[in-house]
Image (cartoon, rainbow, N blue to C red; front, top):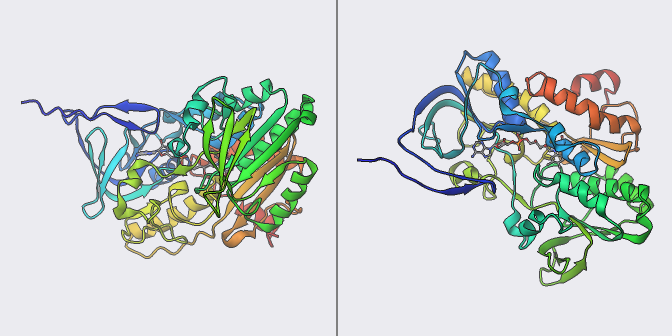
Length: 438
Ligand SMILES: Cc1cc2nc3c(=O)[nH]c(=O)nc-3n(C[C@H](O)[C@H](O)[C@H](O)COP(=O)(O)OP(=O)(O)OC[C@H]3O[C@@H](n4cnc5c(N)ncnc54)[C@H](O)[C@@H]3O)c2cc1C
C-alpha cells in the first residue's frame, strides 16, 4: 500500500512543492536552528564551534543567502542584486548538518519539529530565526503591479523586485513619485525613506526633479522613532521639498489607472487617491507561516514570544529566538542581530549547563540613513530610542564616512566576520573611541 501523501502548499510566494512520507526521515541533534538568514547562520557558526560535528542541525529551505541591507543601494543603482547573493552552502559551517526544508510544526513539550517534507527532528535546544516575510496579499493589486515590468511599481524589500526600482528610476521622466510605509512591523524601518532620498538625488542628477512631486506616505506619526535623528531627517525632507503625509497607509494599487489608494490610520473611512508615475511600496510584513500556524510559541501578533533581555522563550527555556521574527521591541536590523547573537550565545551556553541566562540584550540597533549618493546619517540606538553612538562625532550629521561604512565596510564585516560568528557589533570600538556613546 502506498504511503504517498501529496499536499500542494504555496509557501513564501515563490514555490509550491509536495510532501512525501515515503522519504520522511528522523533526525536528532543537540541544537536545532530554524532559519539560515542573518541570525540563524550566525548562531549556527557559533555553536558549531561549541558542539561536535552534526550536533547542530540547520533547517533552511533556500539555496541562496542575501545581504538584504544592500537592496537599498540596488534600488538606487549603486549595486546589483548579484552583489548581495551567495550560495547558502558557502555561509554555513561544514560541521553543521543542513536540512533543506521548511519547518512546518513544533511540539515544544516533546522537543520535536516536523518539516514540510515530513521529516521529524528531535532537538535538545532550539533557536528560531525565521525572519519576516512580505505580505503582498494585504494590498489588493500590489503583486500584479510588481510583476508587470511596465507598471512603474516596485519595492527594494525583495530580491525579486529591487532591481525594478532602479529600472523605474532610470525610466522616470517626471511627474508623481510616491513612496509608502505600511501599518505592520517591518525590517529596517529606515529603508522606506532611504530610497526616497536616493530617488530624489538621482532625479536631481538627471534633471527631472524640477518636474516631479515626491510624496512619502507613512503610517507613522513621526519621520523616525528616535528624536535626535528625526530632527535631522526633517531638515533633509525640507531641503529636498518632499511632501510627507503621516498616518497615511497604502490600501490598494490600481495599476490600470496608475492610482494608489490610501487610508488614514486614525479614520479608515478617510480615503485619498494619488495618481503616480512611479510607486515605491514598502509591503506590509508578517512572520512566516511556521510561526503563524504554531500559536503555542508566539504572542497574539504571531511573533516568537521571548524575553526582551535574555532572548529566551517565555514558556520553554530550551528555546531561544533571534532576529526579525521575535517580539523584542528593537529596530529589526542585521545590526541588532550582531548584538543579539552575543547575548544568545552566552545565555544558551548557560542553559545547556542548567544555569540561568545572565547576559542581557540592551535593544541595540543601527540604521544607516542614506540621504544622498555619498552621504548618510548613521543612527545607532538602544531600547526606548536612546542614542548609542560609536563614532566620536555627532552621528545625526550627514557624513561621507557613514556612507562608505554602509556601502563597503558593513557588507565586508557581514560576510567575513558576522556570519562566521565573530562579530558582536561595535561595542568594543565604542568603548575605546566614544565610551559615553552620546
Ligand atoms: C531593503 C532592506 C534594507 C535593510 N537595511 C538594513 C540596514 O541598513 N542595516 C541593518 O542592520 N539591517 C537592514 N535590513 C534588515 C536586515 O536585513 C534584517 O533585519 C535581517 O536580515 C534579519 O535577519 P533574520 O535572520 O531575522 O531573518 P532573515 O535574514 O530574513 O532570514 C530568515 C530565514 O528564515 C528562513 N525561513 C523562513 N521560514 C522558514 C521555515 N518555515 N523553516 C525554515 N526556515 C525558514 C528564510 O528562508 C530565511 O533564510 C534591511 C532589510 C531590507 C529588506
